[in-house]
Amino acid sequence: MGLQALPIRAGDAAAGGWGVEERVADHCCEMMRSQAEYRCATHPDRYDCADCLIDHCPSSDRYGIMIHNDGGGGMIAIAYCPWCGAKLPEPRESEPDA
Image 1 (cartoon, helix red, strand yellow):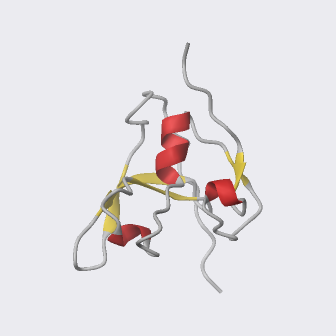
Image 2 (image 1 turned 135 degrees about the vertical axis):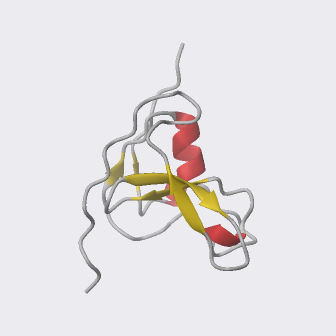
């Protein structure tokens, strides 16, 4: 039996309490959801936490493997889930910050 994606609203405590937008994040599997939404108690910035592996930008639906370094970090975009192998959504253009 495969893993099932669980819809989590970004503002919910289960999603880390980000409080950004009230949109349902549909991830391909439970492992992707848990990695994309992981928050640790020690590091307020996810890029400072080596336990955070996946970054997901809800506005563009872009997924990537996080790069942790002293220079601020970034991510390497991915097209397939590293755990279940599902093809991830094509990133869409994000709206510019106001």
